[in-house]
Image (tube, rainbow, N blue to C red; front, side):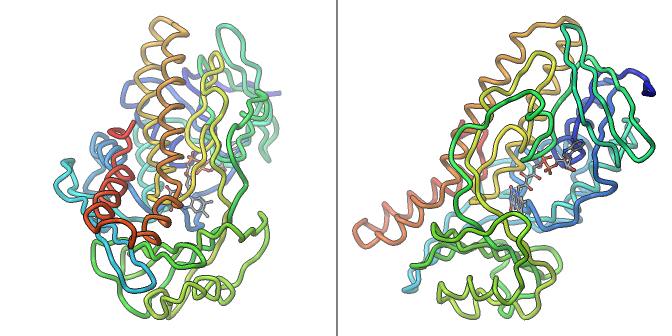
Length: 383
Ligand SMILES: Cc1cc2nc3c(=O)[nH]c(=O)nc-3n(C[C@H](O)[C@H](O)[C@H](O)COP(=O)(O)OP(=O)(O)OC[C@H]3O[C@@H](n4cnc5c(N)ncnc54)[C@H](O)[C@@H]3O)c2cc1C
């Protein structure tokens, strides 16, 4: 098996989290390779909301202007009941570079990070899959499979940013703890029949669950839902735009949640799980490989960017003088943050609050929703 040049850090997975970490490490002058079994960026609809942690990190990399070009600014989350009652959680005035949050498409910001990783001199290897891992006291050896044949790569540290079905996590026998799979969501993206208010993500609560309506760049929208306890769609199942729209329509919000034309349709099933440990000697877990949450508030990728930030300075310090405690504190901080984010992302307290609002004073309901909207977008502060 051919040997490649050694690197200080091997990052498994060129998703948003792996690429962000690659850029942060290169900015610190650390040699790194990022490998991904895909040959290009995943174009399926996925994470669309970037919060303060993420925006700060893009800005720190000098990518703020480029990010703003592919995003739209958002400053409100509205909550709608079937009987017409509405509440608005306002996010402006919370500080930060952007006064609120950004909606954008995952392939757009992932492309920015990929280009930046290359520009900063990282070794980016697409179409190469990590199939084996041999960690030792002083290094980690990875076995890569690719159409060009097998290769061995040695690194001082390896980071598993290889997503929800992480191979590295499986190779290390790390358990995921928590709930799931539970309910399924359908996602539709396209042109709305009625344009939603600018700057506002809407959450529509009906008897059959909750649907999110999120504006996207170029006048498009994302409709995701229903957060319905009864709905389960298995991985690999196909779903048509018509059947996805029919599921959304069950909530009874009519044209407000209707697309004139669907560009893309997909589905996924929620898991609310955290890895039993994030640090395994010289192998660290980050992003979806470490934690999975429900989609409310669009927190998954933001939490993963926080992992990248928390790892970059620790890896730099550990390359100077290895100290297992550095990564013990990474595990402690980020695992607890993931657990609290999972709790915050559970939509059912919100659904309940809106359904039971008649038993609460308006002010109480408004305060609850404001607080939840802010917690969703500021999960560093909510830790
Ligand atoms: C349908 C869908 C909709 C979503 N919507 C939202 C949303 O609205 N908001 C939100 O915050 N989050 C959403 N998410 C979750 C969000 O996309 C993830 O949190 C985010 O992509 C995590 O980034 P990551 O880099 O950790 O992992 P990923 O993006 O999954 O990247 C992992 C990478 O690792 C690669 N890989 C895997 N195994 C190997 C291997 N053995 N060797 C080499 N490479 C490997 C994969 O090819 C992949 O490119 C959604 C997810 C899905 C599936």
